[in-house]
Image (cartoon, helix red, strand yellow):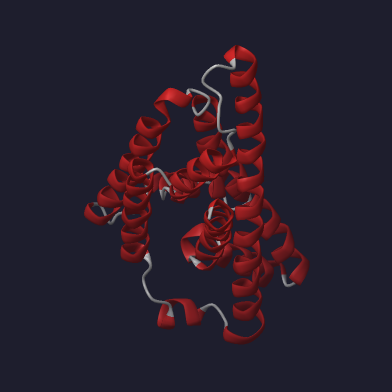
Length: 225
């Protein structure tokens, strides 16, 4: 049963990456714009690479602090519940405040990695991964660590840091694949006008998804999953 739960959590990491990737707010229209302005497809690949780097750094920036806390095994439930509550709060905030952060409009278009990092932070993309990540850590932890002392705590912390890096990498790869496909389709066939005419607004869906993920994280923490 634990193997099924662990597989489901890893699929959640992948699907959340796809979800982030197709969201224009994560930057793939900027890659299309770069290719159109420079009139060469290679510019799109370069821009997508910078966006992926920024997104990965944002995921690590959120996950690493939790990887340093999760070794406090006796507080695991409280940590996971608190993380879920933070995610829910972020979702509610985004539902109330529909304005996009002004700082994103002040960053030079050439600094795509920085833009991607700040966009992911501002939209709570990394927070969405936290309940999933903590659930993976909980399933990967040894069963008896309470009496193992500092050596066990250090081992747990090292394993959780590696897990954080793996989660961020898998998620960013999925995000990059989805964003790249969206960018290529728009660049070669649909054109930028398609985004303004046909693309639905994901702001509300994004906020609601944060709330749902946070609530799931709180429920799984107290149900022992």
